[in-house]
Image (cartoon, rainbow, N blue to C red; front, side):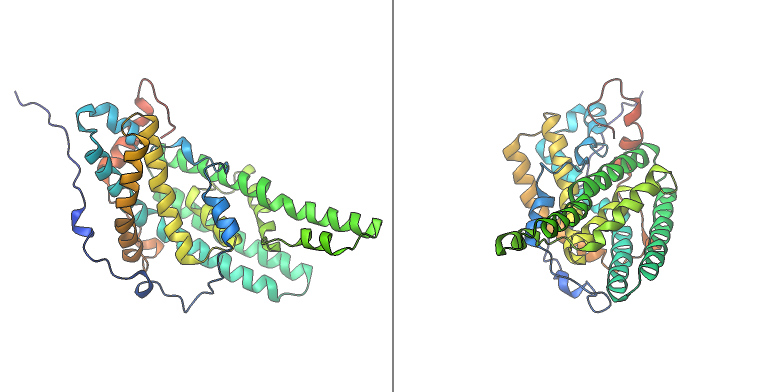
Length: 314
């Protein structure tokens, strides 16, 4: 009678050798690339920002419980590397497509002069983003991962509205009070300045589409929208998506007591070259090229809902 063996995860050592520079793979001539406002970027990276990203372990919890003898720091590092590899091939094509759509709309919105024209352009881009979201919904046929992506997308949209879009109303009311009280001194004018542009307003109608269930609001779609609206260029948005994916996985590993905080940071540091390689490798992929490349992680994510006890939603 044969005995079951614990699956091993390859270490992805073959992708650490001299990755091609990122700039040679990214086509920056067809889209505008606004400079990322550093303050908003650091704010977005802050773990205190309530994005809802720490509800998922991307199958790591199920893997650790099904194969407890394969949870050494080396195994966890391999799992993280392969999961980042898969994220590049599954999510980044959709992130890129949505970023470009919102970027085109931002440029067009700045050129339109009438409110009717602006409203028509916004409705068009929301429809096109919704179509991409529906394509991702069909593509992500793993029920557990699909549900987790919806929850994370809902969370990041809620964060975008509460933390950023609502500030447009605050600024408008502040200007009205200033005119009423005739307080136009230099200090108050400085307080009105913000890195947030008026295009952040699109998050509210997108949230309404979520609530009416016209769109699923998957995480990569919502992430790309908010990243462009906050002014992050395409290269920053793609690399940031991979960074946050790895950070979420390692945060899950710490909460599951698989690695310690210092060991997690060692893994994070070593993962940057591999993430950069995957970012460059997938730069030219379209939605039609999206593929799942980490089948073990996909299987573990699929059985996560059958665990007797669990900390995470996926």
